[in-house]
Amino acid sequence: MGYSFALSDIKVSWGSNIEKDCLQKFYSITNNMRAGFAGSVSLGFKMLIGLAECIQNEKEEKGLIPTYIAQKWSRKAKRIYDNASPIEKKLGCQLLMIGTFPESKIDIGDIRNTKTAVIKLSGPNFKPYIANQHDIVSIGSGSSIDEHKRLIEWCDSNVNNVFGFAETIGLPAAFNILVTDQLQNNPKFGISKHLHIITADNRGICMSNNNRQNEDGSYSLQMPKVASGYKEFLEMAKGYGFRAEAAST
Image 1 (cartoon, rainbow, N blue to C red):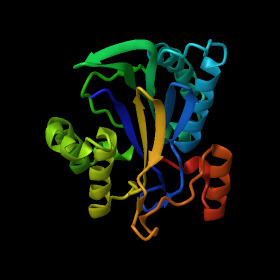
Image 2: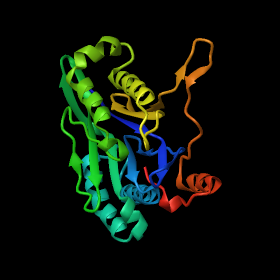
Image 3: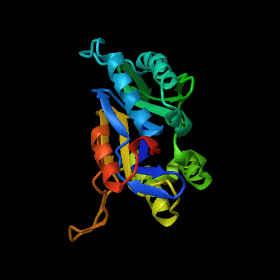
Image 4: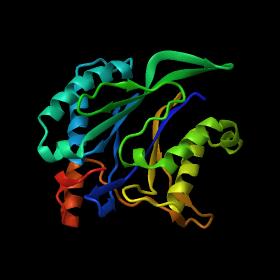
């Protein structure tokens, strides 16, 4: 349908019984790529810093090629992981990139669309997995929840049904609505009902949330304040009375 997109929640947990809705997990890397993480929060932010170092000498005026950057990040990520603390390694690390190819196009019917990519890298080796068309890839706590996985698979295999109300809002937004309904109706530990949706298409890379506003201006679902960087997360964790380095997603 001319899209790649990701859904990312904001939940952070400490052990098996403490959780907080408090963290943005996806970040803009260049004008055509975003990246996010799961596992150790501290290690995830180290990986994003490593990614920034990978691209700092690349020429961005024509955009950057996601698959090329993923290969560079893979080598850097492995070095960062090898030097991580025992607790960071225990919590693990998985990475996800979403982006557009600056000069590549694909034809869908009579429409020419920008080529997009979703790329997964998992510790300890971080070998890039480049998703194929209709691939559904996941990282973090949601990967192990069967009913959530089944819903995404159903949406993808019944796209004509989903598209019935997606014509005006777009397919990623339609997925977002269906997933939000499920998260609200079937809460699970470690998974938030609040989501960021990251979309790669002809417009470039966009990120929004799944807030639900009523006709009177009030909200039936509104994202709380979240940390948008590790320094801010350190302060939030301190306020909760928890160690930031023990946090996972």
